[in-house]
Length: 156
Ligand code: ZN
Image (cartoon, rainbow, N blue to C red; front, side, top):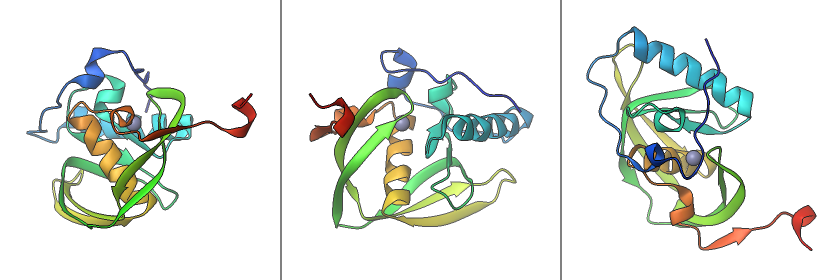
């Protein structure tokens, strides 16, 4: 496994649409392993492949309950209820802002063994699903921020 470099806002790769994974080969398995290691190294909650410069529809998330690997994920249902909460991104250092996301989201994806599965997330996990899947379509959370959040120690 290896820690990969995380691209930062301004890199145009982050604005591009990622391609579906056609075949789960050794490169995809290595990508998943490296992305998990990179996520834990950076103490993030989620990471999408375009953030490490790979335009493929691959995401890893861990909100504290173990790694969730998503290949070709898509949102199949989302609650009408929205929650406005603080969000950040490993590609957007030192910036946090309020974004409205559905309270609950169900995602269908493929795992590393090629099996389709569904997973439902609420609160932070739902937010992570929406945030990471946005990356696969070239979108960053800053496009959706209603108000930036400034931590106390940075206020003057
Ligand atoms: Zn992000």
